[in-house]
Length: 166
Image (cartoon, rainbow, N blue to C red; front, side, top):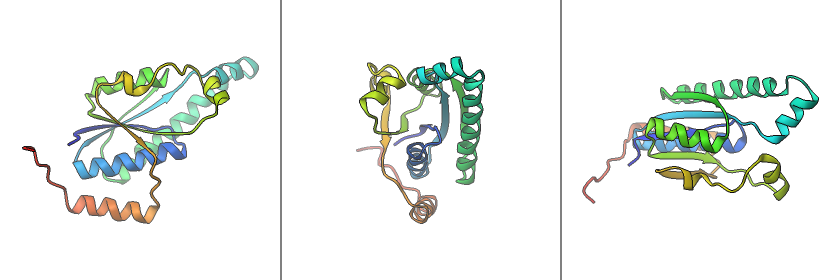
């Protein structure tokens, strides 16, 4: 069903949920995995840079650690991910990488936000689903370690056949 799955990963609990759900789905579909982490230029970080020189560089360094953690997690699961760390607007960067790798599924986490958090984080007039030309999975199912290992092992041992005719 899915052959090229793009995982958007930021290291948050929601991002880890997306990484696990995406990895499990990729294993079931025997899909190629792509990992993208985006350093955003949110107004909060820009304001912090004005008050504390080096705030942006500090955020970039922290995301690099998170990015490397995501790559390592995928490798430990048996994947050889094509991974990219970029600076920019997450919406724009996810759309761009999605096109670049010809993804047929994008997996993202979801974090509930208040009105003020949405305003502080930046623009809210664009939605990822309207920007990409493939399926979008918003991962919300937290999977405990034991269940995850069991399901990954089952998916690895019993690849599911796909009925291409119907």
